[in-house]
Each structure stands twice: as structure tokens, then as C-alpha cells.
Image (cartoon, rainbow, N blue to C red):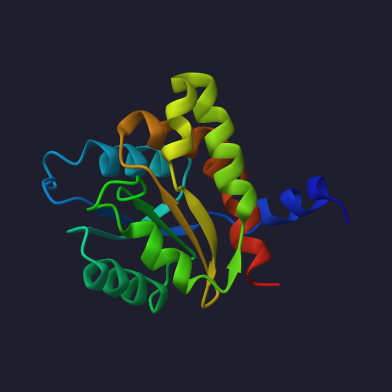
Length: 168
């Protein structure tokens, strides 16, 4: 069975339950344009948002959100924010330590696509993805443009396939 066959079989599974975590020291539900964008894109594609949270870029808060959402019905948990190299950017550190299986291609392709849009600054992104406790975890930058890029070019085209693969 090839990737095309897998995608067709995965599509028959229907909508995917997804949780969204925005990592930011300043955003509120009203100002979280990246989280709102993720929600809108998911819902337009027919998927269900089963959880949403904004946490500070504190390792304990990121880890707690991860644990809470993998314990629920979400098949994917989408983090946005905290993937850069500033002192406050710690999402990657928490997520990367937790992942049981990594999907290096996500970060590699994201940075390649990002490079086409923003140039060499793309190398500062520590976007990553993998599997933790039977749930697909995606960690992308927090800018709305980066979220749109990751969602439209990588996550949404494969969301059902990703969700199906972790259950087989």
C-alpha cells in the first residue's frame, strides 16, 4: 500500500479531533490571531477543535498542556509559539524531550518553505513534530504567517493520514 492508498483509507475515518496550544507571554484569546487562524483552517477543513489553551513560555506550563491534551481525545496537538532562539523560546525544548518518535521532515520542509518566503531567517525556527503517547504533536512558530504556511502546506494536506497512521 502506497501513500496515496493510505490517504484514501485515512480520509474514510472522517474528521480529526485536534487541540491547539498557543505559547505566548502576551497573547489573550482575543489577540491570539495564530490560534484563531489554526482553528479557522481546521474547522473549514471539517476537523474538530476539542481543546484550546494559551500558556506562558514556561517549561512547566508547556509540559502540562502537552500532558493534558494527550490524555484527552485529541489525535493531534498543535502548538504555536516558542520555537525561536530567544531566551524565552522554550517550547521546542519541552516538546523535543517528550517525543517518542520524531518526524524530522516536518521541520526540514517547514524551514525550506519558510526560506522561500523570508530568506535565511528561516534557519532560526526550531519547528518540530513527532508522536507522544499515541498523539501527533506539531510545534510551529507563533507568527500568523508561519502558522498559515505550516497548516496549509504541511498539516492539513496530511492531517487524516497522520491521525490514521498512529492508530494502526
